[in-house]
Amino acid sequence: RKIGSRLRLRGSFGYGRVTGNDFNSSQNFNDFDGEVKMKKMARYGRNLHFRNDIKELAFSATFDLFKSNGRYYRRRAFTPYALAGVAVYHHNPKAKAPEGVADAGKWVALQPLGTEGQGKEGYQKKYGRIQPALLIGGGVRVRVTDRLDLGFEFGWRVLFTNHLDDVGGNYADLRDLDSQLARRMSDRSAEKTDAMTGKVRDIAGIQNVVGMQIQNFGGAAPNVYGIANPVQGEYYRLGSYGLKGDKRGNGGGQKNDVYTTIGFQLNYILTSKRIPRYSGN
Image (cartoon, rainbow, N blue to C red; front, side):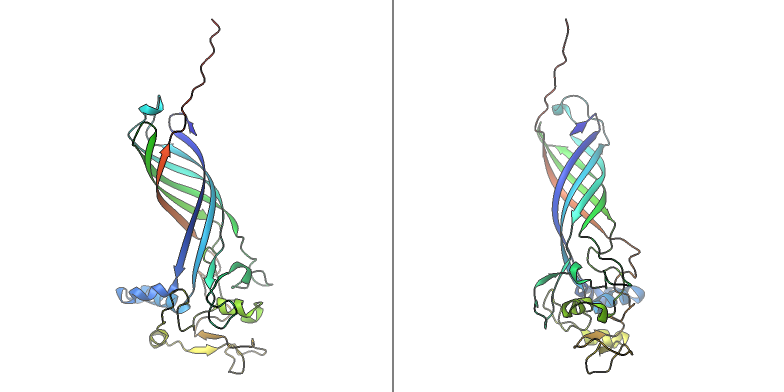
């Protein structure tokens, strides 16, 4: 809805998918040195992945940088604009379950599992799958015909959660998680293959560089927790991952996630009716 010579109000619904995979960090180890290389190798060792389908309802205002007066067919040929607004979106991060569990190979919703202990005493509450967001961005419209515009737009969503990928803080104590699936999805550092691509992981290469060794969480093997009552079962980790308090995301959720949208648009002017003024003559 156009209001005045510069302002437009609109509502929109959008759907999109975001994905991420620590395995991809291995593709450019040798392109970096020092701290950057170690960070990429650390992500590769962590071995987490996700996909998240986002459904967004947004209300925004656009502000044209150039005025556009008069009838619609006299509008400018080229109009850059800024936009701002609010949105509410539904998201549901998932990951492929590893071998050895009932749902092996299937995409499993992560929020109900509480992979970082969410919802348990002493941990953060579970993050919501319906969230608000702020929207900022800009774009351009190019006039094609009297009623048709071609547009290009960039939008930046400022979020209030750090769990768009389910990864936000520190590892939980495996004994605090409710199921075998939750424990296996929490720490995947010792898996021999990447669940998302099916490719073999170079665990030996990581071990040689940073000295990490595969260790068993519990069962009959020595307990790396060093405490009584280890979690029962075969749960392995690559050293420096998986123990309670070890860094899993950015260490406690100090930074929120963002997502962006980039796309082309076709805008068609449906009507330009004007209500005639009444004359009392």
